[in-house]
Image (cartoon, rainbow, N blue to C red):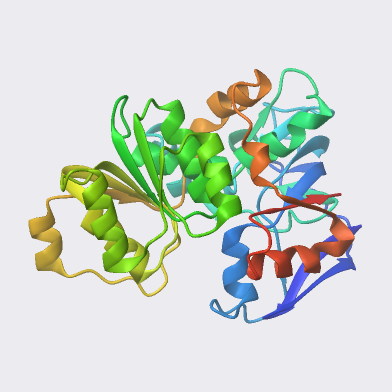
Length: 338
């Protein structure tokens, strides 16, 4: 089969690999209907995260079950399934509390930028659709696996309420899904920080009401101006840099929440400043499995269309161009047809 291997920074290749096999009775094997490149894949691609050795890439997936282990009961061969990028048993105390991304058996999916993939902990990780979905829904169901689930978690963690004012820091795919989520949760005003017209246009399509192109202190000042110096009721931090986190803290009103889902790189906090800010924070890897059934229903009923976030579609063989386009910000998110 064909699969994606990152050999070194900037060196990602589609190569022939052995087909995965059942290794544990809780495994399932699926044939991917589509895969994609995630913004977090760019960290090792850019050399900002050490890989040590060549690694299989890809953690967003949906497809058809080809084989199941002897212990798998919740999905069967032939089912169309969507799974979370975090593998979980969905039965441990943390899973039952809604934080499957902190499962006692937690592992992170790899090897999904391929034609076929092995899914450990299949019963707790995969959710089947009632019937095979229409082809045009595949991109949106793929988005549920991570990028939509992560944007939704950012809004959930920030406690976005009906009628609230929300600021989204970051105009990547996750930030855009955060806009969609905030709109679905009833936010009245959604301000996104963005300097790229294609992303601004999609943000407006998803429900953003205001665009702030300034960054740093200028961006904070603009948001304070828009909110009559009050700040936001909820902030979605979707980048993971020191600047983005500082901006999030500075635009959040006292008593508000920041939902942070950008993987942090070099982020540090001043304890005294955080103390007097009086802002709550919740984030980390998104417990996508908690939201999977609801988000899949929204997609299948055509109430949302997160698949529009894929603005570049390539065959799996051209995965290297997909990484390059995202790295150069020529694409928001690359869909890989397998």
